[in-house]
Length: 474
Image (cartoon, rainbow, N blue to C red):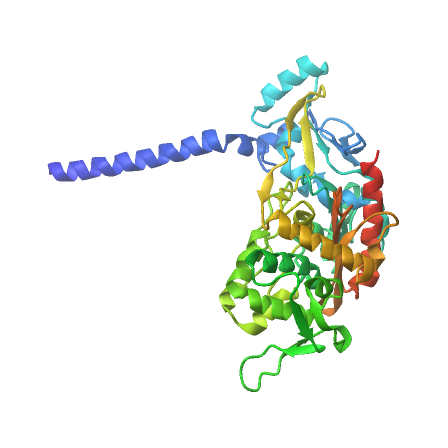
């Protein structure tokens, strides 16, 4: 009998501890996020009395603000910011930065609504609680240049400062008007072009030859190849390993490049050479190298990002898979933000900075509550190898497939990509940075079913880089 009582008592004790731990977790750890969650009825009620904080660009230009306590929300500035800034709507909720920074904008980050109300009355001098403002790293001139260059094209563009990770511009096409989200909702969700979808952070595409700078850096840092080695290109190469498997990789138009070193292979985007380079590196090292560039994992960012896809490890040393990955095809998928960060690491001496777009959070009086620091995300390759690849990319703009990205008097480093896909014409890519020797801007552009990266995406990137360099000189 005593044993039974002890067992029951022990069971009740364990259950009590579990419940107490859960309550402590919800009440202490999760309390700030739950108290400001958009679906919290108390937040909904409080919202009617709160002047939601404003969103500003880096130069102080407002892009989102409340017209009156409780809304409606007024969105101004470039429409191309819609996916990033997002929307706040009584019926359809919040998205983008309006969602990610909902608690800050409501002034509920870590405080109760009553605390925020009292603080607002005594610090801001009015009777309505006011949320905090957020200031972005987006530069208006660069954003407008990206918007103009991308006009009428489906795809995405991302520009960032590789030295810090600060995002300077972000465009996803097609877009929408946040101010009209309520009246246009049905049309937007039924549109086959998915205008609500943020292609810049969530869109996953085969990068095609735009990934070759990263492949070259991996090959050099692994010691698998040297700068002076040459590879024979006769226009195509067989990648199948079994009898009767005639799969092959070819260069555009079947062009035979002859004997090419790594620099020429990058400049002229020789697929045959890069297939051989991938084989030399091997499947496991290739996979690990791409993972070191953060491919295959979601980037930490201020709005949701998609984890890219890379499955070369599952295929072991399969020649065909390794060859496809080495030219940016097959099972490799990446977002424009991922590609901008990766190429930015090449320009930044092998150091990848964590991307961010919210520079700081300010209280209603303008005092800075929190400033986003520049943080090293990873170091995928040593500085020496990054420098070698940078020079190769300069060659691609000076004499290779990326000539359309050139700017007078500026050393631009870049690489084009024409990524095959099973759903139509190839996706057109460009990645690069400028000035090559001290980059102020790294850019990634993808145009869905756009065709040739050199003919289509490189000119778009050129205009974004031009605007970014002007902005950097202000």
